[in-house]
Image (cartoon, rainbow, N blue to C red; front, side, top):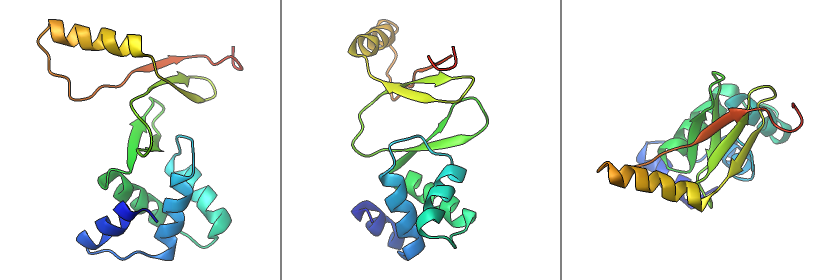
Length: 138
């Protein structure tokens, strides 16, 4: 389990359990944007008796600990991605199949920073989501 989670749980009066360890391990080794349902399915493959509530609560703890970020892509389902080992990135979202592609573009980042600076705006965070059709759905 992540050291950050191990330090975070006692501060919340929580214990490190095998179930939480399984959720964290599967989540942190995933390289996709997972819904709680998708993560539950993956964790059940290695820990068949785990409940959905345990997976969901563990995801919430990961968000609170700064190890996961929750994303909403306009379809009513929250998805989570690891906050470890990733810098800022943006998303291309297919409105037909739901596929999500990440991308980085320094030029876009500079244009956004310039627009904010010209207006005297202090940026704390931002996200860029582009919705359309992926090559497979076109």
